[in-house]
Length: 304
Image (cartoon, rainbow, N blue to C red; front, side):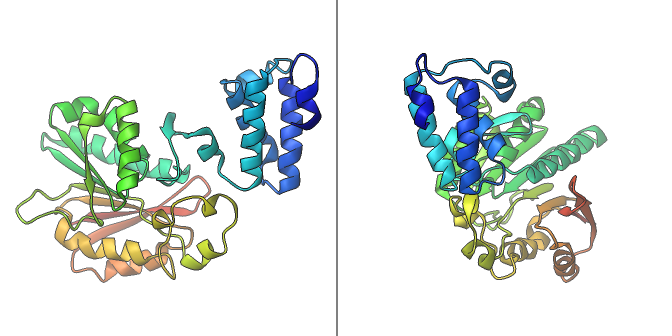
C-alpha cells in the first residue's frame, strides 16, 4: 500500500496494518482498525490473534498486491465477509458471497433458540421432530442444526428441511452443508415460504424463519454493506413486514398443533408482529425474546 510495498524486505504486518487502517478511516469505515486487522491477517492466512504477536512478519509481494485490492474494495463499502469469502458465525466458518445474506450476530440467537427447542423435544418423548427452516440463505442455521443433531438425524429422530425462494442461495447453502460434511442430513427445497407443503404431508413441529424484514425505503437509502447483499433477502416492503405477514398467514395451515415457530424480527417490529399473530385463526402463546442488546429479536409462537 503506497510506500509500504516498496520497502526492502517486503512490507511488515505492522506497517500494512497502519496503512490499511488509515485508508479505511479516511474512506469513512465505521471500524477501520478492525477491518484492517481482518484483511491483513487474511493476507497472511492467519487469524487476528496471530497478527498481534507477529508485527514484524513480512508479507510476500504477491499477497501484498492482493491485500491492496481488498482494501480498495472495502473503501468502496463492500462487506469484509464478501472480500474474504467467509463469515465466522456461531463458532463456524460459513462461506458467503453475493448469492446470500451474510449471517448476522443476532441470528445466532435464532439458531441457539432452535437448538434448545429441538433438544427439549428430544428429551421429552420419542416422537420424530420435523424442522423447517424458511429463508435459509447461506445455510448457516441449517448447518449449525445438522452439526449439533447429526446423530438424531441419522437415527430419524429429527428431520431437517431448509428452503429458500432463491435458487442461487440454495446453491450456496448446499456448498456450506457439503463443506461441513452434513449435506445428506438436510433436505433443501426451493419454495416461497412453506406453501410447498402438500396435503397429507407431515406438518413441521418447528419452523425457523429469518425472512426479509428491512423496510424498502431503508434499503433505497442504504450505503455500505447493504448495497452489496441480495435485495431479495432483505426487502420486507414498506414497513418491513410484508414477508413476515405472509408467513404468519401460513402458520394456521402448516404449523403442527403443539408446534413452535421462531421468527427473527427487526428492531421495533415486535408489537406489529404480535398484533398480526393475534388476528390468526389459531390459538397460540406468544413470547418476545431479546438479543444481547435488549432488543426484541425473536418472536416465539407456540401453537396450542
